[in-house]
Amino acid sequence: MSEAALEQSCDSCPIRHRAVCANCDADELRLLEEIKYYRTYESGHPIIWAGDEMSFVASVVRGAATLSQTMEDGRTQMVGLLLASDFIGRPGRETSAYDVTAVSEVTLCCFRRRPFEKLMHSTPHIAQRLLDMTLDELDAAREWMLILGRKTAREKIASLLAIVARRELSIGLTKPVGPVMVDLPLTREAMADYLGLTLETVSRQVSALKREGIIVLHGKRRIEVPDMARLIEETGDDVDGGVVA
Amino acid sequence: MSEAALEQSCDSCPIRHRAVCANCDADELRLLEEIKYYRTYESGHPIIWAGDEMSFVASVVRGAATLSQTMEDGRTQMVGLLLASDFIGRPGRETSAYDVTAVSEVTLCCFRRRPFEKLMHSTPHIAQRLLDMTLDELDAAREWMLILGRKTAREKIASLLAIVARRELSIGLTKPVGPVMVDLPLTREAMADYLGLTLETVSRQVSALKREGIIVLHGKRRIEVPDMARLIEETGDDVDGGVVA
DNA sequence: CGAGGATTTGAAGGTTGTCAAGGAGGGTGG
DNA sequence: CCACCCTCCTTGACAACCTTCAAATCCTCG
Image (tube, rainbow over all chains, first blue to last red; front, side, top):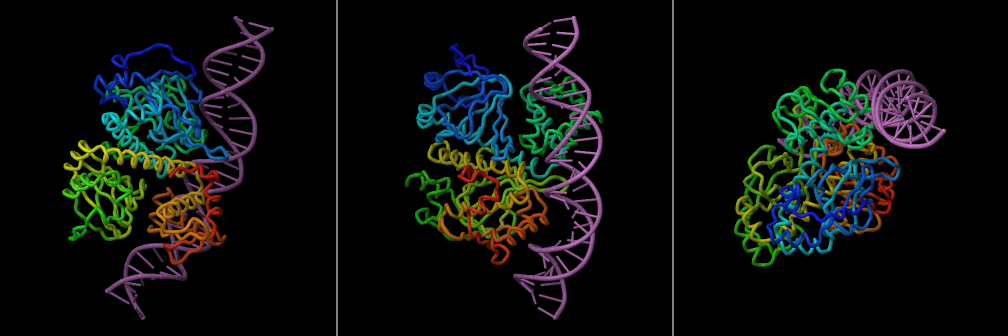
């Protein structure tokens, strides 16, 4: 990791209105700024290992990171995909329960843990926002449980693409009609760890969707979805938007 | 469902110190008592359907309920097991995202949703406690993701039994050493819906664990674990307590 | 005792995992 | 500038685990 020396004001922060600080007023922001610092991690590098002491909690400012668990024999399961504005760490807990890894260059806005916890008690705005974000994450985790437990390999792939596409749409990176471009910052192995599959199965199913024209690959990581409705049919979900996250 | 006419005071409530009201002082409890009422559901009966308007949120006082999602073609996945002191509903959301079903006779302590939401804003103790509980649920959901995505059928069964056993231990229903008795309020089908398996596979794996002496059945739903350590070996988890929930 | 649901068990088949080899792309050094 | 290497990806053959389909047994309740 590298220390980003620059002091950056919260006013110009790109995640100011979506992160854990979204509900804070000017005074509260000032308190946060006293305990915050930036840190950048290179793609592929670890941010925290499971069991490590967490000296900070943080917001993802830019880039993507994954949350994963690994069993003794090496089987690993991703349990979260952290994008801009997502929160890392659990107030009140000393150590991380998961591995956190940068999957692209990631910039974090870190808060020293102890002062942050104290601040949470004195400023309900932070705790309120964190509760909302945690409830959203819980819904997302439960949607994943359905995907992991009950969907076929093909449906899993389609679901992952649909979820990422939907998120890109919601941020406004693409228009809601016509072909959608999806930038997947994940290797085949990472996709497999997400979906509870092997990388070979992922590769086969991606190839199948490509053969059938449901997706078009532009390079390995850039995917075009000519017809979003057709992709969503492949997810197995209720067509009229029954999905949560 | 049936209305439980009895007025019950919070003072004698069995979940007083573990539910969403755990952090409340006497004054706050009085406010809660004004908007609370009890309701009982019979085993097998629905409490809420996904998409229904939620007029209340609630704490489970007694019994067990499940949270589940169902796909169009009938595949269902359980995403939560609600036991005594667990919270039902999401403040700020009008409708339920999941089916909630009683799997044993269940008594709920219900709060009308609107007043509860207002109370949450004025009394941080409630929001704080709810945040803690939600973070615990998120950890539990993520543990399930590992189970669903990466474990074998045998490991899944062992994990489910271990989780319920651990929970019974934490409530103090059994002693931490020697044989542990687990009361599983789930049919084989419900277990299957939990673990992302078919009921036949569940039955086969339970039989296998029984044959090998890792568990002893007393009737269909009551399970004895002679040696907890041996069961935990079968879960595939790190032996020295690496599991969260 | 009979009915119906829950559970167990068996046999066959399919989806996904495992093992293995080869291909594509990008960066480095001669 | 090109050969080489490394990583990621693709594809094939086979095996394993789990599901599906089917039937028998157990259990509870009227």
